[in-house]
Length: 82
View 1 (cartoon, rainbow, N blue to C red):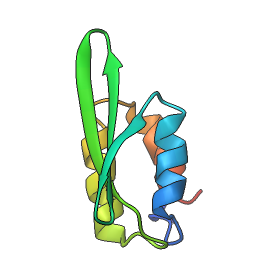
View 2: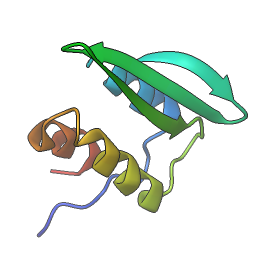
View 3: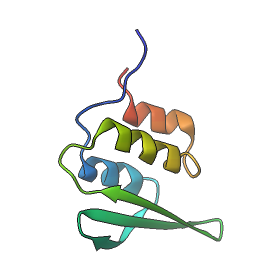
View 4: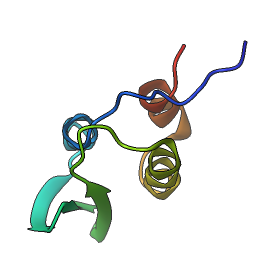
């Protein structure tokens, strides 16, 4: 059976996961958090919603954006079921 996106990931869960990879909340605007980290002299930013349950399409978009900065294997382990 193929792996599927988890359906119970909250914005706080995503923030905790990305925080382990050096991202910190730069600011909040409404229900969204703008995360930033500096890596090898480059500024990297991500926007994530602060929702209790994040829709699967949004999770996929966050994963695709994060893939520029974090390896696919690490992201896959967090966002997908085993």
